Length: 240
Image 1: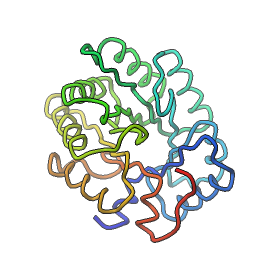
Image 2 (image 1 turned 90 degrees about the horizontal axis):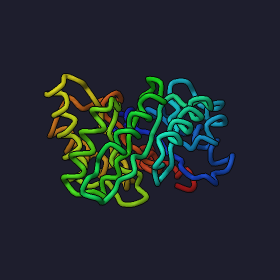
Image 3 (image 1 turned 45 degrees about the vertical axis):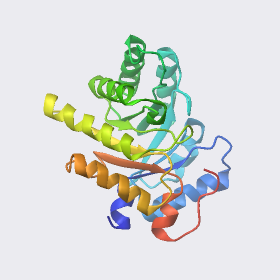
């Protein structure tokens, strides 16, 4: 895939609560010049980023706890509503995993319903923290995320492990399975450790081998803070 094709599906991230005004400004300058699919920031940075960001690039905001997701549906609702009020056009939200045998259960379902309802129809990307889950847990939670109406299943935050080939393959298979079973098109977001064009291309190839229709920004996203530098041969964005 050429660099433009990757930029078209890239969520350019700066998830540092201590990010300076100059770092946020540089983020927006990169985005306005190179037009990724979205930029992704914390809610407290959304007003400033929204004021500087070209309307050709969506503003995605992480809500409901990051990198550790909230255990309270009420907190999730409040956080997402605040993100939207501050300018969010897309929502990224962690569904915190558990190691118990009953994961996922009605507790996760309640949080997913809260995410979907609070996001008010905006694109919702649910982060499942795949590196912390075995195959059964990853398949089960992916199916629940898709059944809840989320638009994308996102592999991980990158803070507790990187996205692997296994993660990309299993999630893509479940997205394909959901379409075959229910006729609903959903997306995959690959995130966590994607700092080179080669790494991104490798995971994209895995997704495509499972379902070649998972392509384009409405079905496939990549989350990274440093990948753009490898695509355009420029410097980084500061702290990641």
